[in-house]
Amino acid sequence: MKVTTSTSGAAMVAAVEGRVDSANAKDLDQELGAVIDQGGSRLVVDCSDLRYISSAGLRALLVAIKRTNKEGGGVAMCRVPDHIREVLEVSGFTRLTKVYATVEEAAGSFD
Image (cartoon, rainbow, N blue to C red):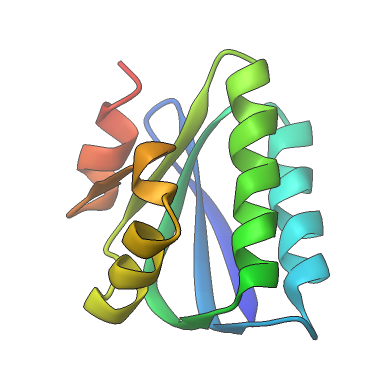
């Protein structure tokens, strides 16, 4: 798993690549936490290169959602592959965060 960060407007973007499972979900949690600590309460998670996410990975996303919501922001997800979107829908994450087609749409959702 690899996380690359950038900005889009007033939002921080975390592009997650590879597989997120119990072996590296803590790394995702730390990476997203570091972005939030740097003032990234408006967080876009770009899933275009995400191949798999386990329940441990979903927990890391849930922690990020709770932290950003507490700070007046939130998490928006984008470019989510169909098989990942299905996991998000079945697990109820689409009620906690919105899914957008592009980084720009996701970043603009905070305005």
